[in-house]
Structures are given as C-alpha cells and as structure tokens.
Image (cartoon, rainbow, N blue to C red; front, side, top):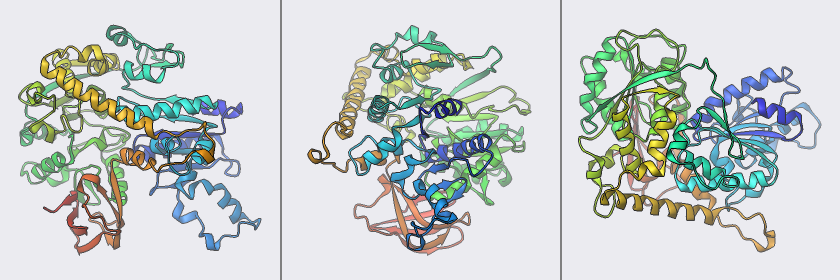
Length: 560
C-alpha cells in the first residue's frame, strides 16, 4: 500500500488492483485495504472508492452493492444531484467488466486475467488495468496454464507502462526465473536457490534484496510422519489427547470427501463433547468449498471468531479442506494434515501457533502431524507413469498431480523432522519444486511419471498460449473467440452457479437463491434452474437435470 501511495502521488499510476487467488482471500483483505484508505483519506468527500471486485460478493466502501446501486429505470443520468454523483462514484461496481476501473479494487486474479484472453470486453478491462499498480498475492507453483496466462498479463502490463508487484511466501526459484525471463534466462542451481536470502525482495533485473530484520521472530516446527492416510479414524489417537489437554486442533485434508468422512466420525464420538466442535450459527459442521456463497460468508466469520487472534482458549476441533490454508487469520495449537507439496504445507503451517497465546501443557511447541501412505508413492505409479490406486482418493496424484513433489516433500521431512520458519523455507520449497531435486527420483517409474507430468504441463502451456489476447491487430481484422470462459472455469474451480426455483432457508439460517455446483457433480443435461424438492430445517433436497443433491450442514452432496 505504501508503494501504491508513492506511485499514486507521483502520478505514475491511477489505481490499484489487488489480485488474490480465491474469493475468501479477497474478502478478507478487502476490509484491511478499506481501513488503510480510510486512514489515508479522513474526509469521505475526497476518499477514493474501494471496491470488493468479487461477483456475488461485490461491495463499495463496505456496503453491499445491492443496497446502493440504483435501478436503471429509476436513474436520471443527466440530473446534477447528489444521488447521481454517488452513482457515478459507484459506476465501476455495476458490472464485473467494469471492476478494474475502480480507483482501489480488491478481487480475484481471474478479473485481471480476463483482460489478456480472447473474450468480450478484454480491451475494456485491459485499458482500465494499464494505469494500475497490479499486485498479485499468493503466487506459487501453479500449473503451466496459469503461469503462462499470468506471464502474458505481466508482459502486456509492463510493456504499456504499468507497474506490478508479485507476493509469495512459497515461490520456487524456477517459477521466479520464468517471471523474470527478460533479464534472467537461466534459473539458479539447487544449491544457489536454497542459499538465497529469505524473506527477500526480488527486483525485475533479478537482484535480491534481503528484507529480514534481525529481530524477526522464528517458529520451530516439529513434524511427525504418520503412515495412516487411508485410516482416518486412527488420527483420533492425536486428536483426543490434544482436546482433553485444552488444545485447539486444526485438521486440513486434501478432498471434501475426506473432510466429511472424518467430520462424521468426530461428530459422533462419545469422548468429544459437542461444544468442542467448530460450529456455525449453533450447528456443528466442517469447513470446505462446497457451500452456498451466503453460507460460506457466515462460515468464514465463524472460523475467525473461534480460531482467530482474539478468540477464547479451550478445546476446539475444526476439520476442513484447502479453504483453511490461506487468507483466514486462524491459530491452532496442533495441526494435522494430509501429505501435500512443501509449498502448500508451508501455507498450512502458517495456521499453527500463528499468534502469541498461552498454549496448553504439552503443546507449547508447534507440532504438525503429516498423514502419508504406508508405502512409497513409487508403488502408486503404473508402467506408463500414471498415478493409480487409493492414493488418488487422498488427493495424491489427483488434487496434487505430481507425485515427485509429494515424495520429495515426504523424504525431506523425514530428513529434517524439525525445521525453523522462515530460515528453512527455501530448503523446503526448492526440495519439492527444483528440477535438480526432482531428478533425484531416477527410477524408470519415476522417469515415466515425470515425463507424463511434463507432457500434461506442456499441453496446458500450449492451451494457454492459444487463448491469450492479441493487442497488435486492427479490430477489423481480428475476431474474438469466447475462450475467456475457460479462464473463469480454471480459476473458479470449475463451478456452476445455478439459480434455485425459489428461495430457501439454509441450515445456517441464510436465505439462498442459488447453489454452486462443482463441475464433476453437474448433470449431463443442465437445466436453467435447480428444483427444490424438499426443504426442512436440517436439509434441502435439490434436483438439477437427472441428478439429485442433499444440502445440509455437511455441505452439498450428490444423492447416489
């Protein structure tokens, strides 16, 4: 924000767009940015608009746009009155295609990427973004499709004179080099990458500037590898003693199905009182992404209230998915997690002993239990290099497709069961992402798997390069395809936003008018609306096409 203030005052930028990976992250950061702008501009008359640029959650200056945007039939755009002035200030909030026109906007990365792909209104979005400071948060080792799109966006943005800032706690040196390809063609060796300063500021010319303060706090984390990823009830051996000691326990699993499976186990366990379980609006529940938007909003607030900085101490158990690993400011005494690549693992560890609190006896030091299979992941690779078997249901080879990253993370944790954060961040990330480290897995099966993963990544990169926009052709000679839909699909986790035939009341007391359905749960024949077949206090039975669904405190589930 300070850099934006300096650039803005110097007339080098006209606006700020803060791009985050998820809607939840955008909503969390929006209120912080809004607070800073209020301090900078005490007078509301001179204060720039601060927009939450997330469709379905749009806010202008902390007010839901549905409460402040006038209906077009009731507006008189030629009348010089106060209402029209307000509407002019809020113009950017009226449509997603205008979001990037706001002076200060916080939204998801897909809003920025839609300015670079072949889709309607791309040039409008690009023109609005060109004079902005573009800040992209949570940049990490994503797949080549996303990396190519972000690279194309940065290329165009910098070529037209814009400014950009990428933020990441877990970006590997290979990915960093790809973003600095104008000035640095070769990524550093593994040894050079591990020894690089952290945290640090990396300039466009490849120069490192260490930003670590001598007084900066460190966190020593102990890892316990538990080979029971396929026996979820067995982690009660860790959960029960922690809860009875008064600890706050966070369990983060790789798939929603695993989350709901474990939640049902702990919800019915006689040694876990109901008041020890995370609850929202008086209902015990897990936390994941398969809830309606209105319910996700109250769920996120409940997580912050019960696990946030100012929350009360005492036993509490929260079971969730990747929705908990970033953006939410939560603190746990004990973390239990499925095996994930080390860059993702660092995100999850960020929720462990996050704040200065009095810890229960036996949990004074950060400890992370990592669930792994009873066998090496090499045994899950077929002769063609494909990941197979039960590991897929645990997200290994599916949610996280590169088994090499997972295996190397596992190996490094066994070699270094105690690490210091942030001192060892580079070692952890590079061990799981650097090509030299991955090449240490050199058996025929690992080589076949690496070739298969590389082939898929190359295909994604080619697909991304075919849909990026063209800014050097005349409009009359260039015809857009609606390929931008694939961008929102990739970034929006391939979800369908389906209107309900009538409003219903959710188990959390929220009024729902639509439902988000993951692409893999969608029917083959998709109707325009979703049927409401049964509505009770505890569950709602829905129908869409040939499929039926149950919506409850567990979230959305398909009825088989």
